[in-house]
Length: 57
Length: 196
Image (cartoon, rainbow over all chains, first blue to last red):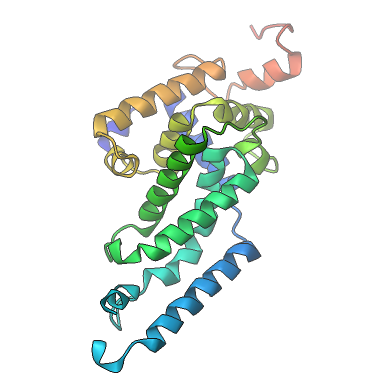
């Protein structure tokens, strides 16, 4: 990103702060709600795949 | 059942569905910055996951999955907003999500002010700053995700930074943290003595 070279102090500071607050807002823990959702979607997908006739691949 | 071919890549090719979970934390943070409301953000993430799941056949294997998911999430956000025209009365936003953050310098107050100012920006400005400033996407990538021209993405980012600087009471050339003008301000109050 050559256009970022020599960017003024304000812009650099803003981007640094953005990174910091954004990273702080990232909670590595995945809520149960999403774990359950993904498990459900996967189960549906596997169900469809298992019902697929053998000759369709 | 020809459509079932779209449900999974052939054996041996990694399934992007398996990588989706790893992107949920970033999707939630992006959603919070767009909605400025933690519970609304999770509803948005849920909707985006469902949309992504039913559209995985359109995902280009080997391309940036996070960028693809971000695009779905922001499109979902804007189409819902067009429908409901909902405005959050009392946004908690990034500020609430980052209350525990300890800045590297002694800029704790400055950072709190920063997130508060960020949450006052328009959704379009928050979006471009999160994509370009926080995630480090290029203007080209951000333009692709926002569905706009590269020049639009660039000028939007510049306006967003300028607006944020304005909200923080900073002019070009002033430092955000190291000189701590905000900390001084917050301690002294708006009517307090000005730093010389």
